[in-house]
Image (cartoon, rainbow, N blue to C red; front, top):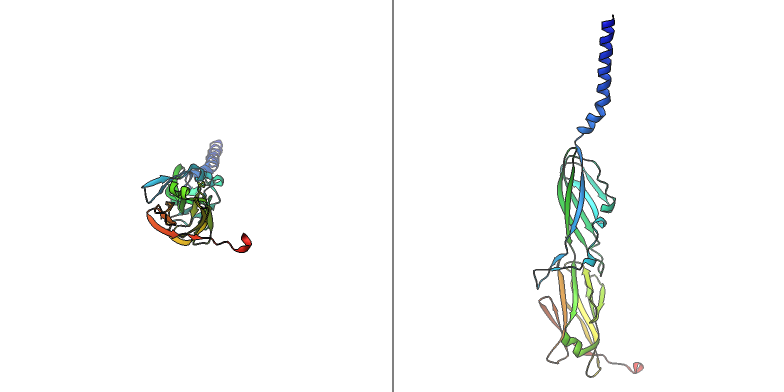
Length: 256
């Protein structure tokens, strides 16, 4: 009887040990892992007159400010986070995924309206934490306005207004150094006012289309006066040329 009782006790001990390790075995074989994401934001953009130029660092967003969406290739997985700052690297089923990041609103145009995005495929491995870097680049278009020395000698108190096809207007003077971000593929229109340096005569330049923007490109609009002295504004959008004849502003009797 003692031998039989001893054998029963041993069997019970083995069974108890087996039950206590079952949760660890499940955790090790559940096929899940995690991913840590980092962001590299490129300052390089295309330019028509040069192969590439660099955006100023002031318009580059912090990596944590990007919105994040992760989708799976084979699994029913589609999760979003308002920013990488709140991404907590959840445990995910092993498989192939794509992380897409975005910053900005393509419908907004202005000085602080740069839009960046990027995506990267990665694979979750069981019981592993992998690291994936996502490269983001500019997605909308940008432009800046330069005034030639000849223009600033010929005209004073100049104001040039650029209107986009969306109806947004931006005014520039010879001292303005802003870069404007606008929708890609949008038509730009230019108009302006100035005074002639020699006579003080007020003139205006009627609105005229000067070209269309290209995605991921920094355009340069150069404002120049005709060196022939004919009272014509010469505009170049990169390599595209437009001339706008000046018109004298007539003052009515009430304005005298």
